[in-house]
Image (cartoon, rainbow over all chains, first blue to last red; front, side, top):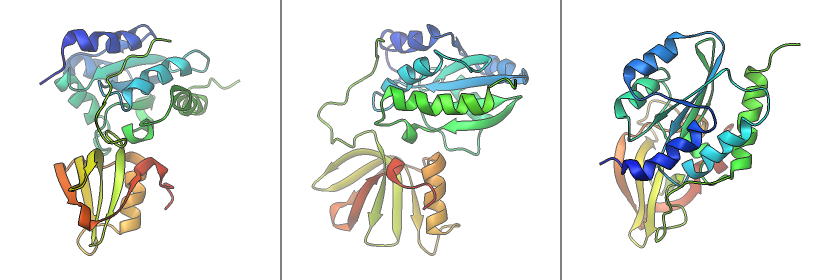
Length: 142
Length: 97
């Protein structure tokens, strides 16, 4: 049974306030994935406090400085089940986990942070992983 | 920065953490720890490697698990305490192991 929308709302808003667009249907996911140019960060959001409680602040910290992905989107595991399944279908060879984060460049998956690499870490550590990925894949050549 | 999360009071400190459970037998489990008590280790969304049966070598299977996690082939499993040799956080493994 999904969590109450009231419980989940602040968890959604934490990413929306950082500039994320929420994908709530499979069609929205497909439209997003059809745009292949540039870089995009997809965050699979989650209620679980063991990891998501640090994942969202980590994302927000990482996005406070350049380089950043061109586009930011999120799906919510356990809430928008269809959208989450469709998003995961674009990296189906990787085990599903939530929270998790996927970075795409020109439509190709170039970096993935699974749940177990978020669990138990603080927001700064998660942000450092993200910043390293952004520096490698999102920086504009001089 | 405001933090939003759900707490898990009353559970073992490894509750919600992805762990590797080494057993006395050929099985090596990876899954999300639900609880650890006198009966054993309860995992959710777990997968297992069995020496001599699984398609890949133990080290290669564990290396991939450390890198990307495991597919949840077992939604819930209890590994009896008497069979358990060690419980370690998956993230603590060197992914090159």
